[in-house]
Length: 69
Image (cartoon, rainbow, N blue to C red):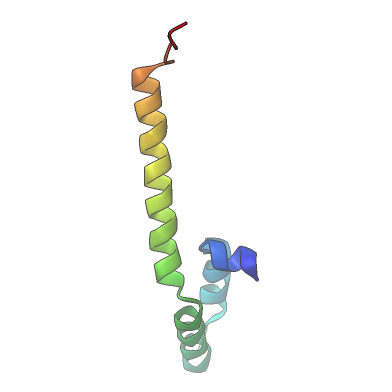
């Protein structure tokens, strides 16, 4: 379960949502999302992705850094 705790499992939640065809299943899905803190993990993953993209962009703009000899 540590893998699931680390990131938002978009495909799994999408499948569960597709299967939630009646009120009882929708409520069960909502409870599961709350228990797993899915929204918090999604936001954390998005933030991490933004930071990584920013780092790559800065590295690309600055180019290789030459070290003095």
